[in-house]
Image 1 (cartoon, rainbow, N blue to C red):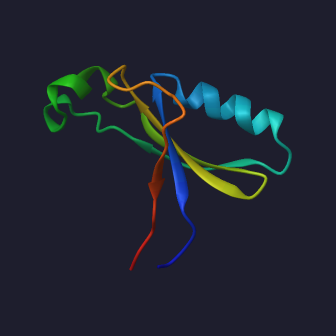
Image 2 (image 1 turned 120 degrees about the vertical axis):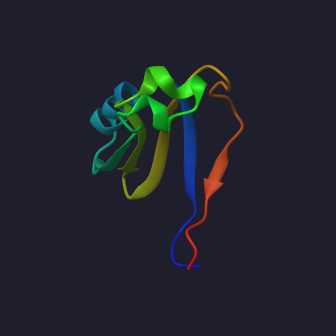
Amino acid sequence: MTGHIVPNLWFNRNAEEAVDYYVSVFENSRIVKKEYYPKEADALLDFQKDFAGRVLTVEYELNGQRFVAINAGSEFTLSEAVSFMVPCN
């Protein structure tokens, strides 16, 4: 294993807004990087087409703890459930 477990949180089209808020509230926090959906609609699945060119994920840290916000639709809702990303070689 190369690192720590990174919780991933699913948002209904407002991941950037949520992360901006979280980073403003918690000290020692920052946005690490953003990944984007392809701009070419033909590279996307049908349910992703209206996300073309928009943020797909935002990786951020809150007081040293790494998180990823997934910008997607209403297929799933933010709840007490959680997913973990485990970076491996």
